[in-house]
Image 1 (cartoon, rainbow, N blue to C red):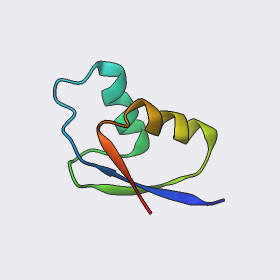
Image 2: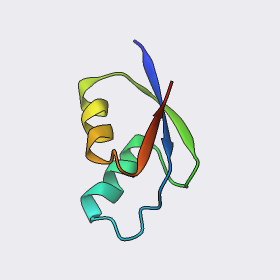
Image 3: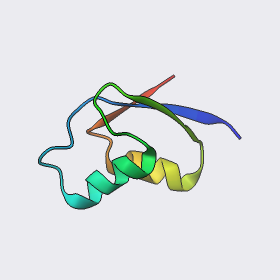
Image 4: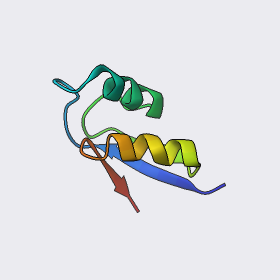
Length: 58
């Protein structure tokens, strides 16, 4: 499967609990951290949910 690189660009402080848990599920714990996730519908949904906190790197 293809992969997507996701970078956390904003802090999760002040975000709702469900968005904090979504970042953890994606493997993001710190600002500027980059993780590679599979290009699956569930991962794309998680990225869409926290789109204001992350950036997709090509």
